[in-house]
Length: 333
Image (cartoon, rainbow, N blue to C red; front, side):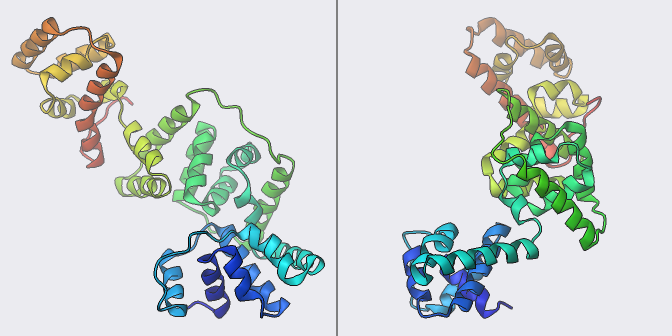
């Protein structure tokens, strides 16, 4: 059940800043401060239920149709708007009080507002339990970004802690938050130096790690990534099985997948392929299919690189589908 203050904060978030300021002009400074704190809390948590917000708007404005052209900006409200309503000195006092209340109430507020690079640097050398707690407090998209940039061994241990969380007391969590916050203060504005292709390498490692989990848990974690960033979620799913992974696919699984691939496309896919992969594929197709493949290869003009990559994706496609269904057997990965 939402309180009146929470409803007021959600209503304000659905309006543009000037309109929100007009609605607040008749309130006492104490009331404005309480609503501002609630707004800051919602913004810091990076989470609010859009359906709840829509319900609040409907409750206040049954006749309202469509949304505002401008979105509510928390920083603008806490800055210019408060100054305009209360005056500079009083607005500054309220902002200081809001910050103190928010930090006291939510130990992880400063951590959530840090950049991905700052968080990765701050978590370097920390215990996996601390990393798991911090990641669980972040929005899913930022959590995934941080996780993908951590050291491989640390990443695995942190995910294990997240999937089998320990029960931690408030004092322990406070120490963790304080420790990470102190490191963040010394890293303000620092960035990671990431080599070209590093992001995909890290996503590949993340994909392999997730693919080793139980199917339901794997799908849940990848689904959360996709909710926040559809393209990244799709990339992680695709990187669970790649062309190079054909060497680790069990013969029976590979045979079933290759039956669905046209011989012409298979010939293109094998152009310039690693000899070991080529032999693996040829040993898992029938003599008739091998003869058709040889014929296609002899008639084929030299394909473009993008055509080869596209054909390889078509070969890997059935393997990915089998992996999604939990039917793909892998050996020696």
